Image 1 (tube, rainbow, N blue to C red):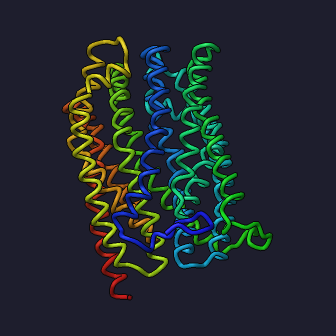
Image 2: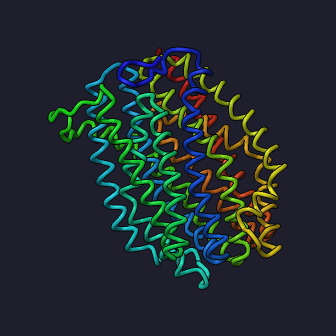
Image 3: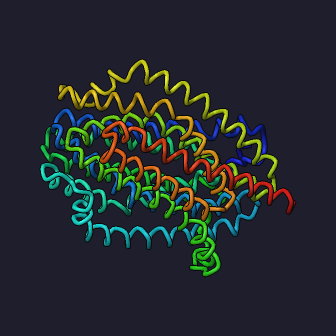
Length: 449
């Protein structure tokens, strides 16, 4: 139920209704977030050419490796906010909020400095083709400079969601998405800033959305108060935050190592394969991000209900979450089946037939296995919401193995089709682990209760 302090208690009401209502703003938010990433791809691909498009795609795995850690950690820091909110302990919730703020700031500063120092060697490590090396370096360096903006957005948005408010982050993300598209056009076309403009537009728009989240959190949410004693650094709270948040960050990074290995394999197949996979992957992300949004809703739902001692509602949430993901996967496959040619052509514009065919093939093969990804999001985020984030690292190992195996098969056996199946293989291995561990944890909690 909605409370006067603009929060939402997910421990009451029908689980299916609560998950859907909480998920919808997240779904629309991630879609609009992908819209401005998609806008980058379209404007870069159509206005700057295939090499620039390949450069953006080439940096994705490194982006995932570094910023993924930050995103995962911020989600983890907010889990304890959700649990203490569900337990009706506002003082403890604010202590976790502030100590999570100091941790997020420290981690983002450290990552900014370190990643700028190693960006060039990392691009060499994944065998970036010389034709796109300089473009890739410019793009990824600007993204790394913007790491504090990424931390600001991710932590503030996750805290609002932990309090049951998924609407405001969506509204602010919608505004920043439109801003990003406008800045893309301004920087790339009239100002002729090239790929630098695309990266700068992404960073600035994310900074704006983060600042809007902070403004709302401290001016409109009554439960958030500024008391000096609650803002002080607490060893006990920092320890708990690190135990929950850092493993979730490492899970993203471990999974991303597989993406780096796979990108290395794609690069070895040449610029045509890089451009084709980039186009297909950008479209794939737009269709699977809603599944990840439902997973994010599941983490908050599980966290609040665990804090309230309602494990029966956690189990019901899993069942309804899987139902939502299955129905959505079928609909997404149908839409892609009907529109994949138009979507790839829209991204690439006039392009080589080989690049176009590769993008279509990628979407055709991967879309049949979307339900695996959706199911993984439910089980993994349930574990995270319950505070078992260490298991997230181990599930990430499954993704690492799957993507590494797919990349190896692409280079030494099956070529490009193996790249198309690498992500589904990674999802499947991680899902197997998460299903077993979720069943174990729920059984353990039921015996304790």
